[in-house]
Length: 379
Figure 1 (tube, helix red, strand yellow):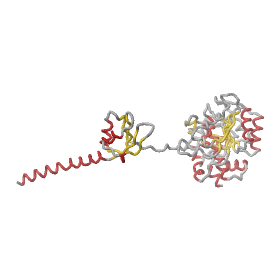
Figure 2 (cartoon, rainbow, N blue to C red):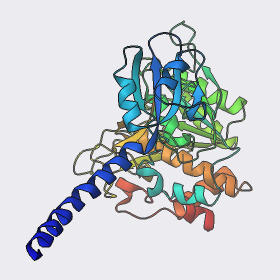
Figure 3 (spheres, one colour):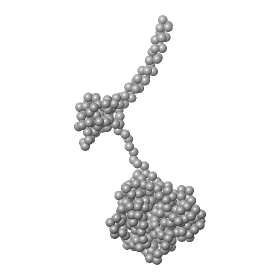
Figure 4 (spheres, rainbow, N blue to C red):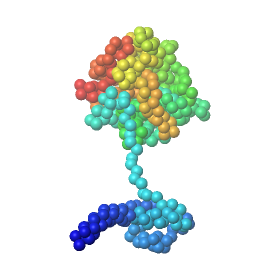
């Protein structure tokens, strides 16, 4: 009798794990999830009812397509998938917002800290003298307030068409919107103006740049960014640069990309070389001079210019290298500081940016150092 009881006990204990597993599996089968069900033809609630789907299980019925959003256990979802009048059954997947990238140069110039303190360049007008700005870009459209083209031909007369992409990239570094997508610029609420002085192939003339500067003066710009230049000086271009500065505008330009590895030559281009213009050199992520960055006594300040991610036409983004990418960091910082200290003249603002720059090395390579937004705001 004892042997019979022992045998029954063993059978009972061996059955228990299997029964527990069955119970867990049955629970999983009955756990409901949200599904999207598409019918092969008009929506058929009768078909759903045949599978035990009640009216309260239907979350939403779409109008334009025969699709319903329903709550189902997994076994019913599988059954519906196999029905000839059901096109598809798919789980209602979760989506999240697209992440915004903060390009490495923005915090390096303390742009992020300044934004967090409420200084976004709001109310400051920045003219981007370049290839135009794609105003339809979702990271720029809120900030592009106007513009002008120096060209009259049909291909280039629209300042908001940027066939080259350079101007759109520069604009994004100055003031891409803080909107949870793409990238953010230094001065994310500054007013941008597309002044097209370079054509869709990226070339222009000193006369065109002079016209762009004149437009900026006449239309009340605060800052001019010129991520462009040439090796030859021009008396007329110098006079217009000087006039803008005399009229109270801050004029910022790329130093040029003609540097050598040793950094011992004098290759700053024009208009950056003029005294009325801030010549900006380029640094890399290690705060070293980018080897392409022009050097010489005219270099005034430095900013990130290697591997800079920013906006490009047709809702795209790309990383570019150049002092063209460094200059808009300085223009953006200037917009932040001017918002914080609107009483400053352009001369006082320029001196403040230079006085608070982070020293990095020889002045012929780095000027006064790396531009620093919060340091200037707090001084």
